[in-house]
Image (tube, rainbow, N blue to C red; front, side, top):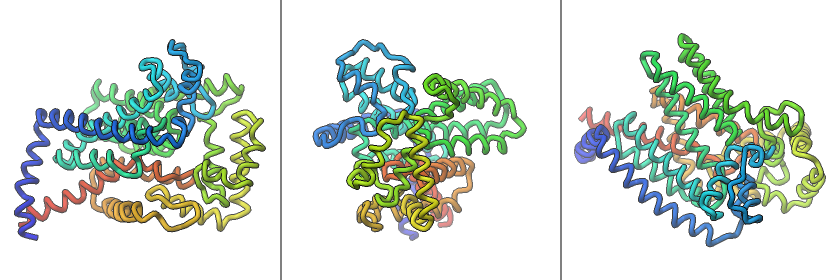
Length: 421
């Protein structure tokens, strides 16, 4: 161990010095942005070459698909035209705008790649400052970028990249506000920015509801003597969030707080015969196809209620099987488990299980405020997907925070050993 610490000592010390250099941070960010961008480009090309599935698997690009079919490039889009009861409007509007601007269906992949890269830039800036390690910051961003399970995300229209960008930004922005010693005009600007980002996130990824609620609760404890900051943050949130229930009310003439995808997701994730499999796999069962057929002529609100009622009814009728499925979904968030088996794939087990164990250990080792906020982000998303619907790709949004927590713990362990020697 002494020999190892002697080898690592100059590297760790030099790493700490580099993390304080603004010039080196700029070089590292530009270099990583370019290299990661090249990697994502080739991954996206590879995924597109397979073309085994339609671009818009989840419905976020419904307006892009319509524009492509009509061959209309004249950016005649609005919140109303982008709105769908199941998907809201913000991300659909962004995707459609990118298509109108670039004129190619692959524009959405470009936007998603850009958000991934911007998230990496944020990770490098914040981690290098908090952990005083540019190497850790680069390692977290690199591992997240090349994580095998997420490579196919670069080839389709998904909400995960912008979701990850918002979650990471909210995590570090919250930490920034919580650690400011004095209330200033800058804090008020940060507070309203925090609220606006929360509003965008709830529209883009309703599965972040627990996280956003947790941030507000956390704020009441940390900022209990700065209620004005909380009020400003809440106002920023309402400015963005309110547009969604307003559009829902115009459509259905009743108050609907979020998008209407929750009912189907809840039913799909808790469908016992298919073991919570993705919709494509679940449709292999005649029973599942019949249930979808029964809902075909219902409007979005009626479908949402229909699927929610089925999910609740099945859970009450089969409590033991439902509890087992919850356990299964909890593990599916971290590793790939086939629909017909409880055994995870070898690759995801070898990678996912040690990472999960190390992250659980890090919960007791990392005592800084930033890691409490990161834990809130990770646990809240994990809990939501365990209850509703879980797939291996959903952890993409919080994986950088998991890697950061584990990496910081290991780095601290090495630094302590160096100091002891």
